[in-house]
Amino acid sequence: GDSVTQMEGPVTLSEEAFLTINCTYTATGYPSLFWYVQYPGEGLQLLLKATKADDKGSNKGFEATYRKETTSFHLEKGSVQVSDSAVYFCALSDNGGSQGNLIFGKGTKLSVKP
Amino acid sequence: SAVISQKPSRDICQRGTSLTIQCQVDSQVTMMFWYRQQPGQSLTLIATANQGSEATYESGFVIDKFPISRPNLTFSTLTVSNMSPEDSSIYLCSAGGSGNTIYFGEGSWLTVV
Image (tube, rainbow over all chains, first blue to last red; front, side, top):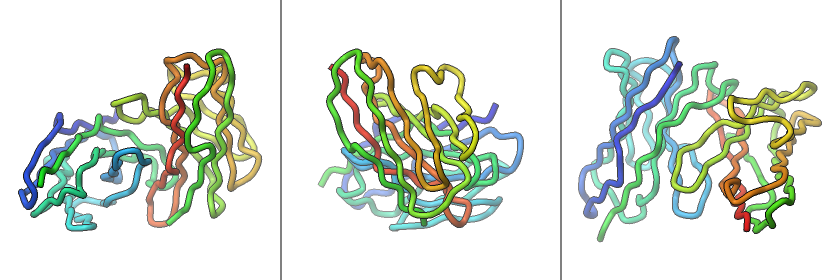
């Protein structure tokens, strides 16, 4: 079945460091891909998404590009801030996006130190 | 985007009791989803709730333990029955919004003592 694999955490960075969180997927069709963020004590928020190959999702300085050839959707940010400390989840939807359920990776906890 | 509200946001429950979580969406949606997030874990889909039909449960989840209602296109409830400490989790409601995106409520944080 479909699955999402993301890098194990926790990841600890200094403020203004470059961030990459790797995410790869397996899917039979052409899924939509998402990154969600969960700040401490809060629910899930959509961070960015991409619905087809070569699409780039971006939000709040974060970016991820849908790479069909490598089945990847790595999350990047050029300069992290303390406020970016959170758990990041990569996810895919293989049922038409808004009409389908999501398959999540295990989450990567990011801690940014001042 | 869709705005999804859940109640209660947090609760401490006694072992053996049941609790019903409510989920309200600000627009009509065909399908709503219930997820569980156990402490320090990722999200696991419990069931998909369609209006006018019985919910579809994922492997490992049964209706007797997690009965779901979906009385209309904007509302759903999930009941966690006969709770045990292993049911201590965040329960999240989600629904599809515009632009092929799935949105989540803020979650209901349950602790069973």
